[in-house]
Structure formats: C-alpha cells, structure tokens
Length: 252
Ligand SMILES: [Zn+2]
Ligand SMILES: [Zn+2]
Image 1: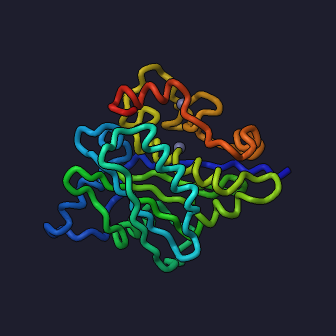
Image 2: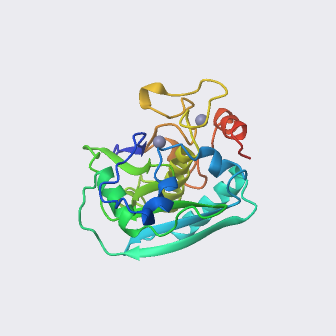
Image 3: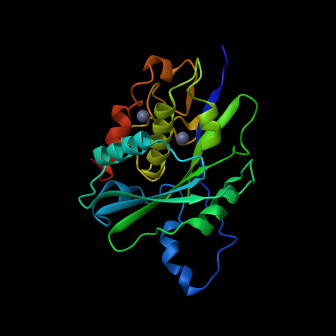
C-alpha cells in the first residue's frame, strides 16, 4: 500500500512584503499582514468583527468543491460568533507557473491578487488554491496546505487532487474540507498560536499542533490513518482541549 505522509503546515514567522509599496494606499492592508494567530480573537468573537468575508483565489481548473466550501462555512459558524454572517467572493486567476512554490512566492501572489481586506466590522480571510506543489515536499511527504500571516492560507490544490479519489486514498471533498478546517484552526490560534492553552496539549516536537491522536489539529494525517477510520464521511473534529481553548478566547 502506498504510504504518503500528508502534512498540514503553518508558518509562524511573518512573511515579508517585498513587493509592497510603502504608499498610504497600502495602509489599509496592514491589518491583514500580521503574524499567524494574531487575529485569533477577531475570528472567534464578535467583539471587533461581526461578519467574515472569505476571498477564494483559485487558479483556473483548481476551484475547490462547493461541498468543501459549505463544510468550511459550517465549521466557522459552529466555532465562532459572526452574527453578520459568513460570505464568499471568488477570483479566478491564470497559472503563475512557478511550481514548486515557496511561501514567500505565495505571499507575493496574494499581494497581487487579493482584493478583500478588513473593512469596518467585516473581517477578511484569503484562501488561495494554487496549481502546483510546495517547495517543502520531500519524497512521500507532501504539503497540502499552509496557514501564513494572520488571515491568509494556501491549499496546494494540485497535490490535494493527486492525493485523493484513488483506491486507498481519501475522498477528495473530505480531504479538502479537513485541510481547510485544519489550516483555519491555526488562524483561530491553535495550538498555543495566539490562543492560550487551558491545559497543555501542545505537540511541541511538531510545532503548534495537538498531541491528541485523531484530533483535527494533530500534525499529520496518514494514509490508512484517520481517513480510513472515518470511511471518508466525517471531517475529524477538534478534541475537547482544542475546543476549550477556542471558547476561552471568545469562540463558540
Ligand atoms: Zn497544522
Ligand atoms: Zn486537539
């Protein structure tokens, strides 16, 4: 049986804005260019932001399934207070043809294409679905998604499509939904990434992940592991400790 290690990553360090201008026109983008986890409370509570707009930026031919976006919205509504609702805007782009992508290249692409930024009490999230692979892929270890900055994440959609819907592989919608919810949970501040732990459950050997096996925030999902157990029908859920952390930081 094929053994592939699916990695769900985050980048803690601030991604530089090498292509940014320094003009005042760029000032309104600054709130969306903070470190990963810095907006955890803004996502979880309705204190500063009453609604959320998600900008889906996808390369032609790599749009995620509508079912996966619906699952992501359900996950957000279950975990956060956004009385003004959660809405999507979509933007199709042509292939940058730069695969494999470094996270700096992804951030530079976001700088070029992203149009939705925090405005009033509406929080903005950018999710890019890119047509190539991460430069962090090594052999059988492939990266499916990365959370970077405070309101940005990327899904390596070509890798994800190649990792699903074949015999012995997860269902594409389930894999896509799981990766989306996992990466967003990093932006929610898990684990110990802007949301304080109530009890210590950080898998420190693997960065800001949960040490509970089977938790959505466990650092890896192996083929033959979580996905076969759930028969491709349920997204792994957050364990009680992750849920307690989110609630203590304003979440639902
Ligand atoms: Zn992760
Ligand atoms: Zn957990």
